[in-house]
Length: 88
Image: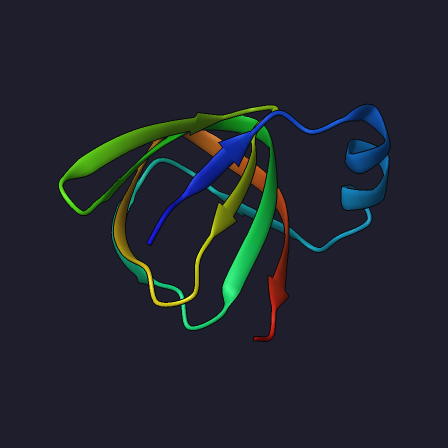
C-alpha cells in the first residue's frame, strides 16, 4: 500500500480547487480510508505515519491515500485541503 505525493500541474490545480474543502486545526488522530482519496493541500502541514514510516505533507502537495490505508495524522499547522473520494 503506497501513499503517493506529487506536485500538481497548473491545470490540475484549477480543476481540483472545485472539489469540497476540509480544514482542521492542529490535532492528532487515527484515520482509515475505506475508499481511495485524492487531496490537494493548499495550506498547512501534517505528518502522516503508516507502516512505520512518516511522510510530511504540506501546501502544494497532491496526495493519493489508497483504499484500505490505516494511518495516524499529526497536524502541525492548520490544514486546508480540497478532496475527492474514488469508488473502486
